[in-house]
Length: 167
Image (cartoon, rainbow, N blue to C red; front, side, top):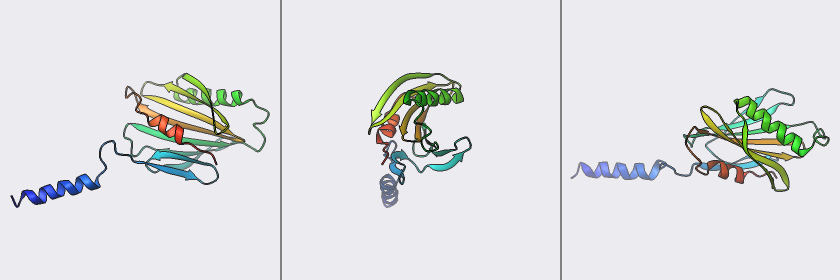
């Protein structure tokens, strides 16, 4: 009996301190003055080359079946005024689908926080990708969640997208 007590104690300590399967590993991530979003794990930042360059934050920790990404492309001041919102959304949608080798499906126009946007899905051989694109003045935000093929929807994309906020 004396031998079981430490083992039981160890199990209780582990159960208390280790995250349980499915436990909420999400936290609020913020880039001051630009956006705030709930995301699992700690995103890593990089700058992608292009004209204009794109800021990228990626997190694949905390959710073993998903990858989360935020892309922010800040265009020169006033450059998007001469382009229709639909034109920006369609170009972004087609560009992301082309980069993945798929076609956009389940496209839907959205308006939240008075910011125009859209959601869509791209299916590839290995993964399903859910996207949300939002336009705020000269900034285009593209959020994506990749899921392993056949995993189905578990609410992660919806939670990620619904938590997105531009100050």
